[in-house]
Length: 190
Image 1 (cartoon, one colour):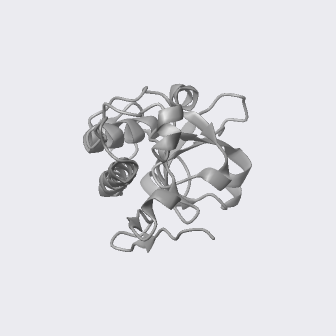
Image 2: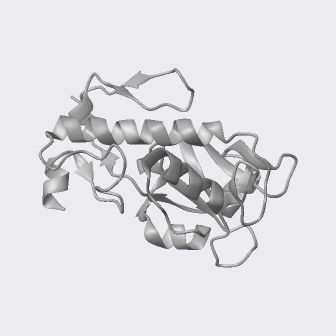
């Protein structure tokens, strides 16, 4: 853990062993770039599923449920298999606050009025997430906003699967953004 913090990354379930993971000998900047690239690839793959219909238990372009969508996005983008249900994903990820959330982190919801985690999506930035909705005006893989009344009311927390990138390590380099083709740059503090 100490080595990860020194490398500009904070611990998460997927430290290594995923497609695009940084080499153990990588510099802090190389590690940060690798994780940033992995987050960018994850979001590109997730966006590619937009419009896929909702199908309970589905994990393919023919149809996906919420956890199937997240599972398939991580598997296709990074070659890793996450737990298969939204509740098991919630338990598997590292808890983070909304103030710490970065594109590629997971957002979780309690949509049935119980204590169980029943829905998951992938945060894409600027208060927006992508998920496979089973009910409402639009269903299937869609984009929604965390500040919509329904999602605000049912929000249960956020979780990190990929390491967080320390922005000071990537000062002046592009980072992932919610809008394809649009990039922001890290700035040094101070």
